[in-house]
Figure 1 (cartoon, rainbow, N blue to C red):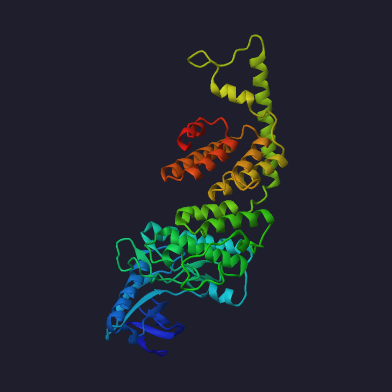
Figure 2: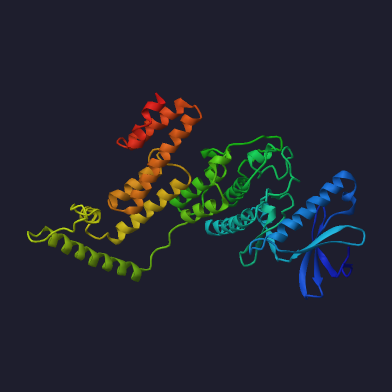
Length: 435
């Protein structure tokens, strides 16, 4: 179609994009006085059985995007067919460039902007997944970046809706360089396939290289190794390390080893972000409050230690747990430097927890970071809770290996766990099951 022609009530202004499948036009809606984008299919492709499949895929894209109302997903206004029966759908018009246009020209973003882009993609995917829709083709070409740095996801053409059977097991659809291993095998997929694809995009944003440059369409899967992730050179060393852990988990070959959801992936990125320095006034206020609290605790300890003073008793006549905990807690307030180090260790520990680095590798795991936090503040509740969570996860790992009959792995896991928690009854009880 040419400028000035009409498609239904819409006045065609220009061509926004053109490919082998169809054309996207910039048009004008005179009824609502707004600029829109219209996506069409080439008439020559609509013949025969393949044409019917393509028509259904096109209708499914319109239906999928029409269900999704989110600031980071392009809005579909309506689906129609012209007088000749050629389908088209009308959608929100946005001015921006897709990420492929930037990356293909060697343009890289800094760490902050890269994370900002991925966070918006994950927010959109979290919404679509909650609506029962898996995109299945997340890639730079389908992520549009606007002038104000807002991201818009497009092209839900091969999306799988929970109630739909159009995309069946055994049919491989998607872009080989970005689709998950299970999708490449033609297996049924869930939200974790989008997690994998987003991880591949995140890696490319941070490095300018695809996660697996030599990947071909016939390759069943690939495993990204630590060596392949050394290109993460944005930001400070600690943030690079955290981002590497996040990307590595998102790109796990086994879907069970990835983030379970886009929301969990998003939370991990938020944890990996550098912590902004606390405003001096607020930090000093916290220090003064800490000193006052320390004086109060010291006074209480002195009172209860006096000959006439008595500790608060529980209903059983024994000193209450709360009093016992307070008496053993750190009395002196943390200095500003100690507080900063404590928060840093807790943040690193939580990232390790998110990517399941519980007790390995040596010196770079959740146990080690929580231990460093407890060295600073032995009574820190978050670190104590983290240690308990690590122990519980280790127990679950051993029990899972036993359940699957992998006794050699279970023995190894139990041995490593007991090195960290030698007196844990839950772990000791598993000894007899792995003999």
